[in-house]
Every structure is written in structure tokens, then in C-alpha cells.
Length: 125
Image 1 (tube, one colour):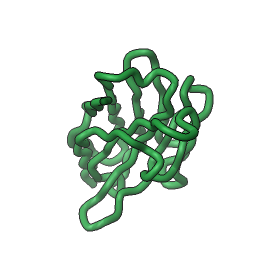
Image 2 (tube, rainbow, N blue to C red):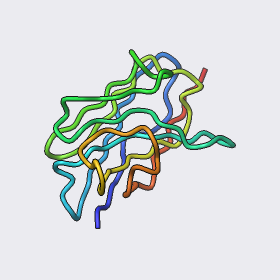
Image 3 (cartoon, rainbow, N blue to C red):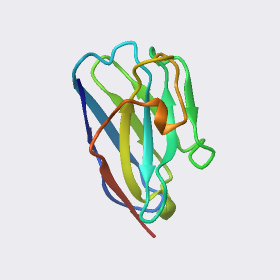
Image 4 (cartoon, rainbow, N blue to C red):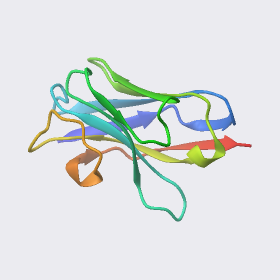
């Protein structure tokens, strides 16, 4: 079983930065693709960014390209968020991919098997 714990959320003014972290425990996440998703009130959960097993390939949603950067090391996965906008307000979830194509970054939530509890990001205008 993999447990994922997000941290780094909070309240920030529009235009400011925030860095989220996702620390896994339990089964190793080494060699597994991971991703970030978010869910705003009254909206569906949506893809934000994903990174492959060794950090060499990443994918981004159009809404965050050029502003967000996903990365990982042996300890955790990160999401550096710059130039934040009020529409980025959401609960952010990290996820780890096991099973078929576990090493490839995916954009569909159904491709991920373990999820964190989420961390709230609120961007004020």
C-alpha cells in the first residue's frame, strides 16, 4: 500500500508563488509515474501535471503551462506554482500510478491507483 501526503497548500495573493510537495510512504514509488490533479468547488477533478518514472518527461494541462513546474527526487514529488490566478483555487491531489504503463505519465485520473488526501490552495484576487 502506498500512502501519499500532500503539503504546502495555503492562501496566496494572485501573481504569487506556492510550492506543493507530495511525500509517499509504504511501498516504494520509485519507478512509478506520478501526477497532480485538482478539484475546485462544484467542478470535476481535473488533470494538472504528471511526470514519468525518472523525471525526464512531464505533461501539463494547457491552463497551467508556463506557470507550473512538476519535479521529483528520491524523497518526494513537487509542484512549483508561479503566477497564480484565482481560478487556480482548488484542492490539489497527488497520485501515483501502478499497474499497466506504470512508468508513463498519464492525464486521466483513472490511470492512477493511489491518492493523497489533498491540500487546499486558495488564490485571492
